[in-house]
Length: 469
Image (cartoon, rainbow, N blue to C red; front, side, top):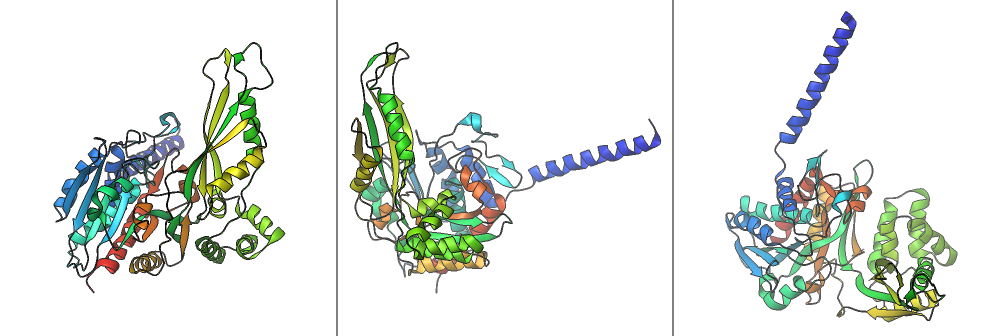
């Protein structure tokens, strides 16, 4: 080997060794306390079903007790599902503030993940795992921000209640609604924080906007059931239930509910226009203030973003299909479940009627399944908690616009809003559009730096709203 080749080989080997040492040092570096807690939470598999949250309660219990919190672990009729409540006492001069986060998560398609979804993998500045965004990341941020009040001995004028709840994913029977019905004094408060609005980053990682949800979209189910002749698969007949269902779905795919804006979404879109430029900014303004063709063009433009589309429309999504039971039998019926997320004020009966008109097929039944509902008031943006959260968000992310928001999905905030307790929702960490797509999907993740900044924001909020004046 020539001398030049030897020098090159030595340099290359040295570079490889340095890179390996740097990677090892990064992996062994101590995690931020919030990120470390999130790793532990992810490793407790609380996929729902079955929704076993006992391990999370066991983990959190000593953390809060040793910091002076009063702790209750509340069992439910399902032995796997428990609610965890920790209360830090204040002077009682003002009513409590509640900070709530659900600990159950949706399931996974393991083969589609690049990492173990329940290992709490730390990689490239992110914590990966099911629930990293929804909502174990929120559990970690809310828990650490609340613990900091005790660690820093912040004098409090009101109790601060931390709730890690069970059974949220899917409006299940022992969720916050059950807890409110059976243990209301444990979670009664003047106002509450929960999951909801977003802190959205641009591609350059600067925060574009902070949205604080003050209301949620409603949710109900519509089943389409088609009927035909059941017979041997070797002798097909024209009235095939699966074909009928397919045609109905094809027509439904071309149907769009009209643009429907609430005061919250009007404010949100106009705020978003301030953070946009050119045609996008104009489309956002036209969506709110335009009419006719202007609004239609604006709707097509903003609907390229699934989140913005969901805020302007009641959405209809096929989620579960059932049809057939043997390979040699043409079934007599087939069914698809439609998940409907409705703008507040939308009547389920009107959506069902619109679907009937869209599919235009009398062989397909449109069966409406409405969950028990009652009018849920919008939380006002004038309370001390909303003002404190908005101020803390602006202090942490001064480049961002802050706005109220209609959350595009459903949360368990109704357990409190229905009783007159204002609830404000936020996913308390900056995320990118790419991160958002991974929620309930594959390789869900949240950045360690976002967790740190979110914890600071929520801590500042709690000091402001609960600290001694």
